[in-house]
Image (tube, rainbow, N blue to C red; front, side, top):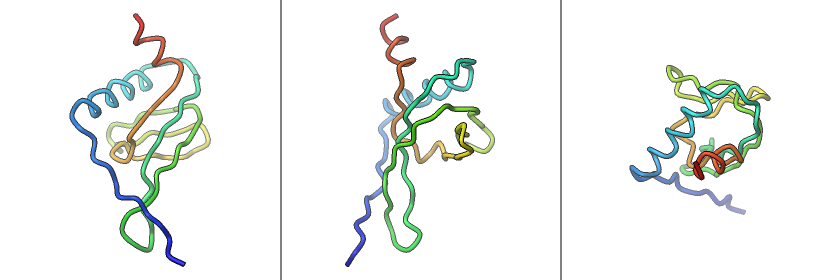
Length: 95
């Protein structure tokens, strides 16, 4: 049986700006609020991959390494992220 893979999506400029603002917020925040990060994981055997959503607390946003470190040690490349969601973003949008 063949494994199904997704192609990596390309974000438009508006989505990139919004994602960057959320990453800056998380990098500067001292709150330990849970977020959901949806990101692309390439398939090791063929082209494409899959999108997975990881829930947890962001410990660090590392600009030099261009990744996000979660509280369980998961490192997510910023270029692979397509969405970040959490209650803290809903609150800031209404201000």
